[in-house]
Image (cartoon, rainbow, N blue to C red; front, side, top):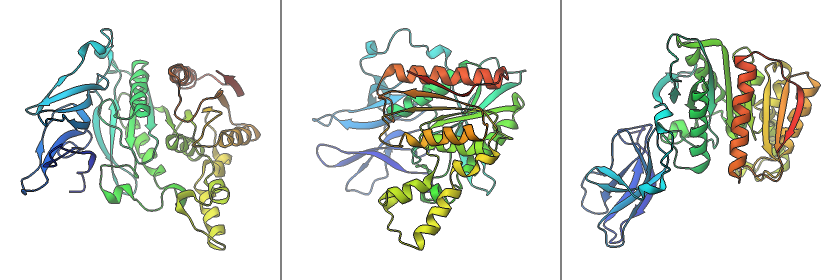
Length: 380
């Protein structure tokens, strides 16, 4: 079916079995499965339930399958699989004071974009939110060919992003992490959706749909919705603020792309393009119209821009240029620049610094309604 994709494939030492992770029967999680190379027998689940497993390995003697795994409230750890269940290996390596009891279990939510596309997300509801009107945030992952899960992620950057969403929930924000079109595990049509990226940025509709879903919830204050994300999620954050400041009242943009047209003109290999005039001129125009920089005139909401100045994925000048455009148009913004840091942040202290700054920024703008400085620059 379209909601059944395969990831993390491993061949058993005797070459008789293929072991893999899949979202079969559990679309927003991953479990370990196996299937015979020959024999025609149906695939068999080796793990299941409200857990997540990935990167299976079969021991040399073929007696055991081990993997990495997590839950909604416990981080990645090694596990041995046994009869559909799993047993943690090296339990002593998990800190005894890891705050699992303080974390929330995100809810699977399913809603539609304005053009009818079905979207999945993970909703982090802060504890003791009932009976209150709390501020809310849309989180957009990077990639964009990723899928956020109902638990700690299998990739380090998104493992940390999941922890950030938990942290923001602990600070009283209702967070919706949206799996917008272009991501894996929802079928090829979803993954290769038309009119996306620099060809129209149709995925921005999904971010707006996530915000409207949040606004429909009784415990959410519809006038205090923000958004944040990194890399491609930073692009979507900037697009949301630039085009929909009436919905998004504040945002935090981690190392996002702000002008696609620069990539087409300065990097002819971008996206395996082989464009020549007049196709190149038309593509550059479309790419510009699919970029946040094109909508500075309607951008009103405050933003925190975060990037390492040694970013090898998204050029640092993308943030420098956006900052100048925001300043020229009197849009309130702040900057946090991390000297010598790269795109994915090398240092633990960098993640702690930027996540703390994110929560502080939303506290000041969404909770307290305070004005922020014009282009205040912090470095770390």
